[in-house]
Image (cartoon, rainbow, N blue to C red; front, top):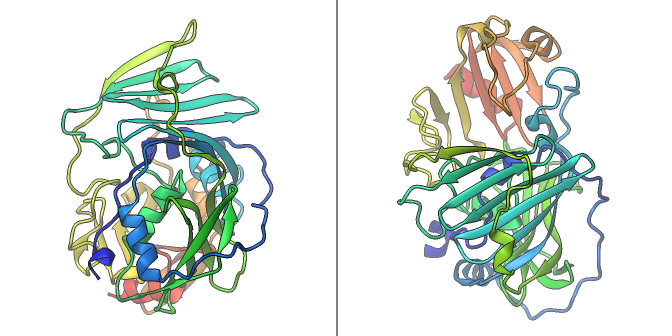
Length: 387
């Protein structure tokens, strides 16, 4: 059971900043092609968990495809061009390189340009060809080997390893762990580890992790919603090469005319996204994993509900005051009243409000200014609202 309590190290994870920095665009790619099941020696779920914990990887490069189909209601025109909506829909293709815990790179090439995130030791570069702008950060001395960049706060996993790490953190008595069907992913034979919530209030049906049979590296990660046999979210290699990439892949050479902004990353603090979750997280009355005292968690495991208090302007359905100079990459103005008006009106002994539902999560915005969210049924949100 000890392997269930510890989380695997992010051995070849590109800094999680990449999930925000490069996923704003994407190339249209079809669903991952199915291949014949390979014949592999039997392996138990416990053995596969140990494989994930003990695998060692010196180098890797390849192409990763991420696809999301969460069944969200139409949001077009409300948040135009926002990375949030693009991350939650459609297909995105990235190239990744890994050469040890201090050298990682992820790049997105779309029809409008290229976006890169490169870590080389303590140097972290981000670059966008559309604006020909780059940001350079010198990571703090306490950013140790193998740790993600301190500012990392991935909204969606950029690689199967990152997704698998997050999923394995949820393995506890509320999770049924089994072995699925073998598969061939990116030309590699793989076992499939299946995680399934025992609580029926969870909207998640299964998490499936395809693990390279020889190198024990996650090659594909899928999330299936209840009532569907098609992944609502998946991230997988379509090509993979386990040779160590050349060193020049991690050297950023600013192109002519680029505008470079120098920044210094904050030192990481306990409880920030991308770091270990405090032992109290997920228990009623305690702060959420992000460490925000204004957010509390109701319940535990797969059916945890996060409860927060909205500021007055949002609770009233009005847009907040517009800043004098919006920061680069910030969320554009949103017509909050129009957005709220498009949601389903609901009420009960907990009060009244608006409900947003998708295949994998539900969000309740109450008229008294609370927001409740979780990968749960609306009924579970109503229970949390009553408490």
